[in-house]
Image (cartoon, rainbow, N blue to C red):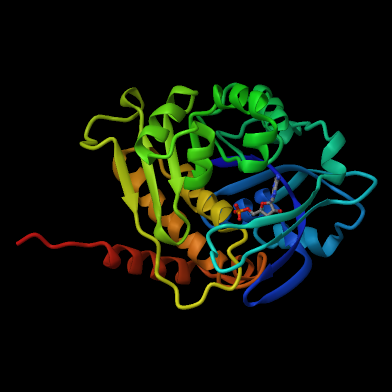
Length: 311
Ligand code: AMP
């Protein structure tokens, strides 16, 4: 099974209470692809500039991620500058330089056409839609977005949402998108916009899945499910946690023969596991070095964390 992901491949300049880094490898598609690569074959569509070197590409290759869909264009790569103050759950965007993404027209290599799953990582919803329309036969389309696109490109985003099976966003962004402060009401509204399933990420507090009535197999009693996050003693850099959650979640789903409620719930836990690794170091450093054994160990910790015996 393989996942096709389109999204930003970027350089990030980040300040957190733990320090600063300048122009480290980042981007929504990068974090997603690294996290998902532990579970399934990943193919990336994006664009980079002349500042993206063979060494950067090697980070993808080392994880067996297919980079044939990453176009090299004249100019500079997407560059995001952000900081986190006391609230590590909320990034403050200081600058967004779209650079080569400004004139990007995504093209799908023939070798990617048989991808079964599609992830529309955070990027201009117009580009998400272009890719979605070129992949009409995929089994499942999940997507992400953020406040930058919700407030500045709302119409296009609403059009893209109509063609998504599932949306994964932060709780603040879910409320902003729905124009509603209560999470359950916000979820209802968003599911009327198109996605049959909504996964809301709560940063260090875990994630909640909401299922539309028609969207899920029999056997689910509630129309929602909450997965925990691991309380960590130290969060160095939250950047990429959401994308790593999405990568663990969707990567695990894609690796399974069928989409049962149990598989879906385990996928939520794998999302939490990958998000918890991502924040332990700046940029992609931790996901570049994590091992499958560490992932399995942490998955067991997550299970233990939320297990209740009923006598
Ligand atoms: P998150 O997982 O939500 O922390 O996403 C972090 C990544 O999103 C960073 O690596 C950024 O490069 C990327 N990013 C930030 N702003 C945007 C944007 N407006 N469009 C696409 N990607 C972005």
